[in-house]
Amino acid sequence: MRRLALFGCALAIALLGAGTPVAAKGSLSGLEDEFEKAIKKVTPATVVCLARGVEERKVRALPGSSGVIMSKKGLVLSDGDVGIYNDKPASKSFDPSHLKRTDEIEVRLPSLKGKGFQSFKARVIRRDRDLDTSLLRIEKPPSTLKYLVAGSSDEVKVGDYSFVMGNSFGLADEAPPTLTAGVIASLVPKATTNGGKWEHIYTSAAVNRGVNGGPIVNTRGQLIGTISNVVGFRGKKPDDPELKYAFLGKCVPIDRLRDFYKDLDEFQELFPESKRKIKLPTESTALSMVFNQTSKRTYDSLVSLEIEREEQLSTMEPARGGGMVKVPRYLGPVSGTLISGDGWILSSLYNFANIATLNPRFAGRWKAPDNAKIAAGIEGIKGIEAHLPDGRKVEARFVAFHEGIGLVLIKADMKLEGEKRDPASTTVATLRLVKPAPKTAFKEGRFVLAVGNPFGSKRLDDPLLTVGMLSKRHHETTEAPWAGQWQTDAGGTDANAGGAAVDLEGNLLGIMTIWSSTSHGRNSGIAFIVPWQDQIEPVLEEMKTGRSYRRPLMGVTWKDEDGTPTTQLLKVAEDSAADDAGLEPGDIIVKIDGQIVTDITDVKKALAGKWSGDKVVVVVDRDGVEKTFELTLGARE
Image: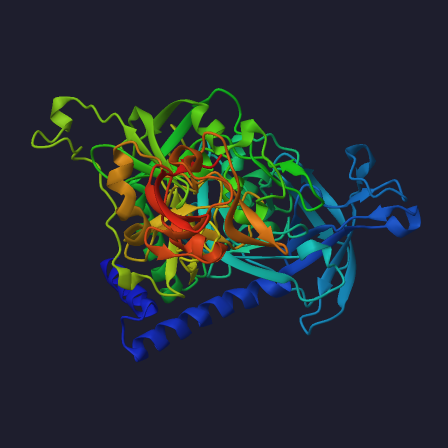
């Protein structure tokens, strides 16, 4: 084990570019070879399963399910909805009253050469919709069938690479099936160990409609489960506890399926005993071990926050066709990152308020109702409970928020009995904090581990983990709220926003966040990292005093010339910052804090980095005479 651990560290260094070119090349090529071998095993065993006879019945076929061949005699595993169809020909509705299921199945075996498929008749032997599984038998299987060998889901770890394959989006007439890859994101324990340790497995590999029922395999090419679905909001309430896994792939572990089918005559054919040892992949195992151990260490710095509100958080965003739409949000425990042993916690503003109003793309297009504004989200917080890494539950208070970087600061009450406290300080000795990464860790293409703790009091042994890379750093001058932040394709979710983004060595890159409920997260490949050194450290001490950073407002309307705003004031709002300072309509602003301004772009540049409460010196031209005023900037709603 020690030798494997050392190899894992060496591989991580090589992948980070710190190793020699030869080491990096060898490690990467070996990793790709292992992936290729696993993919070659799963591809020919993946099939499409459709309701048979829909043409004769003159009803509408639906996209169908995927499936996996389990024996050369034609046993196929699929999901509990295999054979579904709509019995109302003209209807495009998915009204459950029109959805029927048949045990007569058409199994399509795609060609591996790129087009076409073989079609076989099959019949369901057993179906269970609660477990979301079906077992089928192909009636006249060809002798050339390729099948998968079942592995053990009990051996799976968070961070292990996994491959998912199936009939993505119902493309049943195309070949070969779609492949996605990702890591095991979370393992949910069963109440008993009968039938395996895990109730469900969640993967970060992309799962789309039609892939359900298809195989999920490990890097050995062994079946570790079947795809149940992608967890989403359709048909679910926002407080459904399963939604902490929103937009991750939900899988039925193979050991649960092994237990479920154990009484069938087909059991030995389905799960044959094998004494053949399958060689453990070296490179992928080592890298997965790095993911697992690094995420476990990071988990020791994460808290889970339960937020009590006066009313449900209202998240509104502009609809494509105009107006606004209310976006469902997971309302359970959210992630936070403990940044000091005396109880300071950072989390994402996304978890606490509707932040769509911060996006300048929406400015002027819509007006958020009062209950969907940031202030309403913050003011509606009645209490916060923080579940600490050592299992304790403590009260916490909201201290401050920052609209510019999208974070909140929280203070937890860290009172402990004497024997658990370090008497020399207020630091709790048992807590391990994540160490900030050096600036050299930020390079496009570097690995990112997004680690979350949405489990509340039901803390699991492992965190919620998604893995990706540093995609790009957005320029500081962009008007988007993610200015200066790093974009990552490590899956952002409602559950890991506020958690830690770390490198392969476990160093803190920053805090995970999402800026849009509809465009980011949700399997989009877009999430953001608020960098520690560039954006968090410069404002942290001020935030600890209770100062919240809000977007500044002068309270003026600019005069237009041929549709272009000028620096001349058309209106000054009553009781605004400009009004209190003495500015008047007709004044032409010529300087802000010593910077000459000639157009609105200059005004924006002069106010960049300013926040509500900041003082600025404004020089205006009033009837040919320059006058100087000091403004205390107000706050935008």
